[in-house]
Image: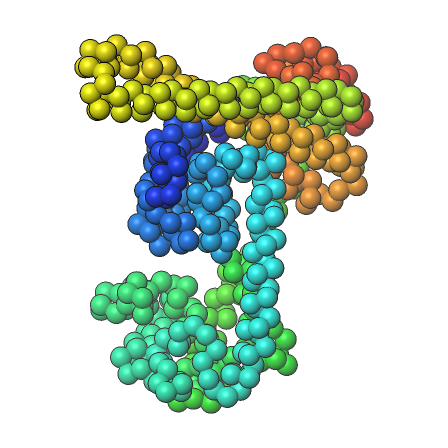
Length: 520
């Protein structure tokens, strides 16, 4: 079991409407089913969010939904388990918003009924489909809005969002806000005097000035407000666009920009003086970002403990402590072969999946039988109670007959959620195995032709850690096939073992002889 799963903190989402409760679906049953799933995954349930007798038409603004989103954003929970998607939200727009927010913060959604667990390869496809739907919806809205923006900009009308700091909209016209304009002018004067953005922000904050939202000024806010040409009477509109609401804004072609004249706050001379110093500072601070140079940088560890790095004078991952070394080309060759370990014959895959389907089928049949028996016992208890109420059976007779019926019903109610959780685990695991096998099959054949950037992205997504030992390499993936699917080259903790003795120094390993593929 991987460290990732052991430390995963999840919440349980329970929403049962009045109609559901009438049909006998209790919140406790949903909670128990979710807890058993989390227990099977070695996850830690830290929160339960309950919306009893609440309609699913809209739930995002409820206190429990807000508490759940806040817990996720703060990292208190990294996943949310619920019985089915309709329990989370029946409103498609809210479901899209929930899923995008979770994806943005790297948290998982686990829907037991639909067998969706975004911590698995198959479940991550859900995020892909949801993202596609959300993108289509945004593009439809964006096209309509984009067509209206240039027209409104040329007319000097609002094009969306708040008025710039120092201004306000009055009767659809941009006018100076006296209180904010005073602060914005002071900002320029302080920067001309001190030429330090952080110092200007501190001086404004110490004097009690705040941003429009009540927050403290920062150096980035100062930089943005000093550079904006609106303060010298030139309003620029329709000059940016964003393909993604979470992405950076990009400049449109200058031919599409719309300028209009408004009342200035500072003189053009003061603005130019301040911006001259800003440009000088920016030129001095420019640094080129350094991308990952090697495929397994940051993921390679020596068996003695520390990370391994590639020194400038050697094409090998090297341990600074024990001087253990591994050629960079050989390690990639070993990794390529690790991907190949997914590839078993079609017959073996079909047999494995058929067995999994049969197991699920048997458990579903058993679950159906147990539910029927539980319902039958409940009816018998109700009839017995009616007899007692009508006086047709005395207290002693009622107690004698009630006790064995209640014990059997309680046993079924104890077993039903546990059996349902087992089915959930099997279904989701089954889907993940199918997806992982197919993805690995395709990945192995394409690997040599992939560009470095794409290889690095894949490595970061599927590799947890690589440990280089004396004659052995251990590659821990976030997912590997079940032990029955791996080639028979020896096994240890569900993985593959052989010696790494034939990879000679300076020789590219096209057929590496050894690695440990640990189940994680």
